[in-house]
Amino acid sequence: MSPRKKLGQSFEELKNTAREIPEVKDYLDSFSVTIGHLVLSRRLQLGYSQSKLAKLAQTTQARISMIESGDSNITSEVLNKVFHVLEIVNLQAIYAEEKDTNKELIKH
Image (cartoon, rainbow, N blue to C red; front, side):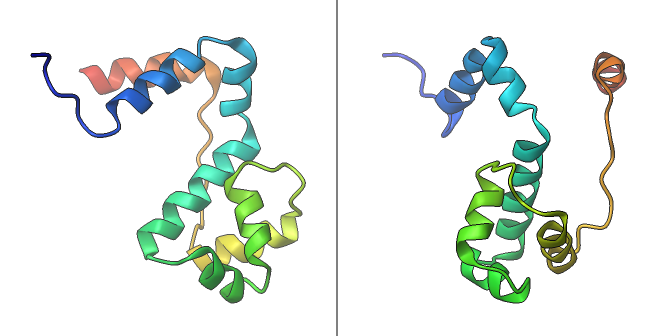
């Protein structure tokens, strides 16, 4: 019998395999997808539905869905409102040349 995989492990493997395709990697590393992931993660952390977040940010549920799916046609005005509601106050950039350095620091 094969060892049991952890829940989500095969999805992680799929994502890692997909990242080997340059176009997919570029998309997954894009600003809009990064922001979408940030908004989704914080929304779930706070226990908000898309509808509740939309109401608090004075936008629509469809717009929240667009943000979370990585749509790049979202105005900074809408993002500002969403970030305010989610209390996202700072973003820290990690530059490509710093990625490997950060990984090495984490290992030690």
